[in-house]
Image (tube, rainbow, N blue to C red; front, side, top):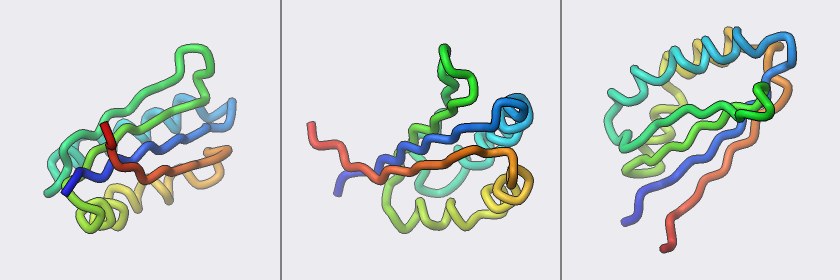
Length: 96
């Protein structure tokens, strides 16, 4: 079975860029240590610094869902409430 690829787009409010970036960075190390995490990379748009993107690969959807319910993801959601303009998530499968 193919890995589950997640592409998550986070747009911070213009006055919250540094705060959101800091909160997102806090999730990287604990997530990379999680069962089923193959890849978990955080990016920031060079031309639009309010735009962050996670590119993730997981062994299964179930293990990704465990991550989504993890303590560090819940802590991020609570801390960043009101600082994020929008959030979009795509569940994808590599086809070639």
